[in-house]
Length: 448
Image 1 (cartoon, rainbow, N blue to C red):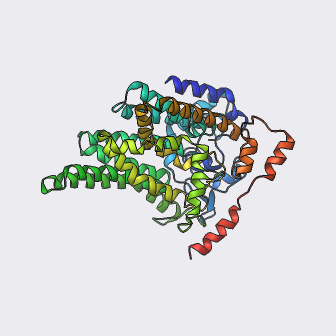
Image 2 (cartoon, helix red, strand yellow; image 1 turned 90 degrees about the vertical axis):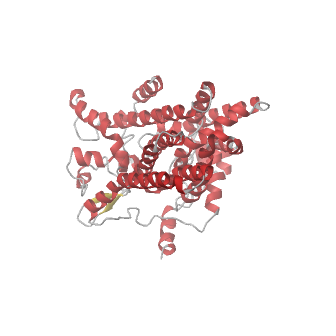
Image 3 (cartoon, rainbow, N blue to C red; image 1 turned 180 degrees about the horizontal axis):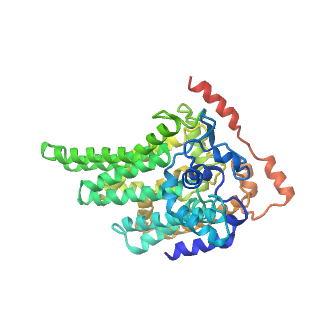
């Protein structure tokens, strides 16, 4: 609660939500648009109201013509569902503060910024509950602090609100809580609830259907541990069928919405965007490149993954290790096979934020078990934390370029808090700007 209040006060005093369209712009606007469409403009099917709001929708890159004179957002409505309480509070209070109930005036923008902080804090509270079942309080506290301040969770929770990733982290941690309860023998219903979280994650972002590999990893390890005899068949069947049903219930709303908005049960809303599954170089660049390398801009991830061997040897967390081995390689492959593997203008590899729900466990083991190298481990962790905070503000101040960094430009701006006009020109000369349009055209050929 204290962290939530402190971060909310920071956002309030910072005032971006009052002076600009922040955070209801770009991708965040695409996820949010369902709320004003439903509660204010009664225009869920066509979103035509955006044409009357040129200031808010000067860029409609996330909207596509639906063939009926209106628009369809390429983003799914899952985030909007989580934002409903905050939206309604803003809608109710807006007139009291002299603002119009337009869905886009300052109270709405502040409410969405607060919602991101709320779900970020809730994600870490849930994660701390699960971690506390395996580790001491000091290890849990240290792990949570390192993940929050030492990864881009901080950036997308505090400095860039409204996009999906921290909301997904919340759902992911909730899934882990359910799975841990099931693993401890509290009933098949918890496994079903975990699978419901998978369905809701896919409702937020379709590729998050991959999180289904996490409960599958747990289930596989359970079968491996106790065997698959006739005596266990009915129990396994109950868990599996219950999980599938729960998953389908929570993902079904997206099919209903597509039917409502397009007349078809299935709609591919990303048009020319898609995957390149035959380009492994993208995976290398996505992990180690200076445009958006995960281990470059979030080295805490590398420290966490160094604990996988310790996790493998720990008998208490066999289910968690199995889940990581099932989920992480496939997730890395799919995420970095996206045509825009750097995911546009963003700080680091934001698509990997939910993964830290699982990587918290090997990170905690590294902190707990590194007896002989404790000073080195904690020094690295502290350095990575400070680097992350500094680079987060570098990105916000546009010192780190949003999508065109190279090794030379990274080295040039490293440690700089501000750039003169001359230094900006020098940095720009070292950038490698991606050609989004050309990669989109190549997709047309690739998917023939």
